[in-house]
Length: 583
Image 1 (spheres, helix red, strand yellow):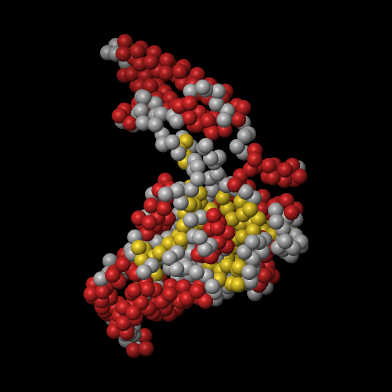
Image 2: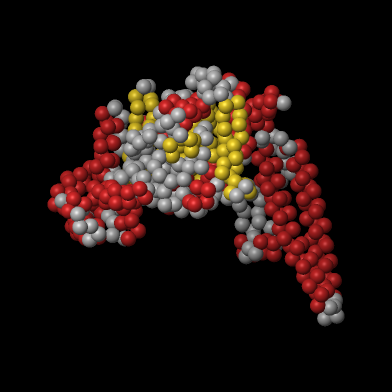
């Protein structure tokens, strides 16, 4: 049975586009026949209703009306099925029609009856680069997204670095220097905080979008580090003029707020991200583009600094806890770096959309992760931005229809930095928890703090998949599980003995729930030299396939080691966004 499963998984990518092709013509014909019959029946029903108008009872009229409404809904669905089948036939070359225009369907002429669509739009054809089931990209002109699917530190940077070799533009869209990606290239370790890790592709342009909050001293230090490592970035990094600035006093406020919170602290990185976003929402913040008008920048900076000192110092009587800002020194610093910063500053909204229109391939590098999302995460133990898919539109200024694929990155187990709920958490000082922490080198890229570790959490991942609509998954650090005699997967949440099917918003419920585990056998074989799925130990294959089955999303990439190329790519057939090119 398992051998058969392996063969099926191996051939999935090739077979998914041809399976059932012979049945398409029959399905289309059946849909058309049903459609014609339903139209005739609907016309007869309407005629009979008109002939009997004024003589039938109220109940009879109600029955007739219900029949017509139901038929309309069914007819609408049948029209859509017919269009979708026609397009799929055209793409796969199985259409029996001799009419060349059949591959570019039009909206039904009576679409207003079925869909509520104005009749003036009924004759418009679908765009030539679309089918009824979505966009088919001939070459370029696509936006793909890599996101963290857990609580961060999943290994997004390595996938971005690998993918970016074939992309023209790489972008960050949310968060700030609180994010961190580590990539090892030829034994050299690169740590990224603000700059997209795609900068290691010398042909790629990198964008820091309007949704990012930027601490300019950190950005310039990161650029200097790249230059010292021999990475040429001049003319390849662009900073949005709409991106908000993080100042040193934002970081000071962040740290002091954590200190005041005591045991109720949130566990922030103290990088000033929350206070900077608070300034943005309060509409008293400053943006990168404000450096172009120095008198305006100076006026706004003085006002913002005074606001923070007044607001913070009014809540303390301890002089040691006062917030002090050397306004003149800060202004002198920003005036000195303004030319360098402005040389990288541009309207990234226009730049990105023009790149898309020019057929460029754009890769979005997510920061943090879904479970740290200010709206969807374990609030208040979250970051101050939206690290889920919505930030791609709001943080870069592109339309949703431009997104082609969304890739979720997930560890083969689970980690978290900072405070907050963690249902599958293990003790990192002993046993399996210690193994995951030590073998996985689980320390934060930005803070250096040890990460909390636990088993893979399927309910959490289903929630993340629901929000982001992942088309494929990147399963990282499978090699870290090597040597464990048995593995557990958090399969379900139980509350008061009953399985719950949602991710609770209440922290109290998250603390009270129990995790139902499924146990699988482990493996001892080294994975770091494995180059294909079929070369993995059988138990490692079983683990991957079981996770894939539970989530209902194909696992395309599998991390088997710490180095840049220690990744198995199972191919485009393991990506729901993949569609054959239309020639």
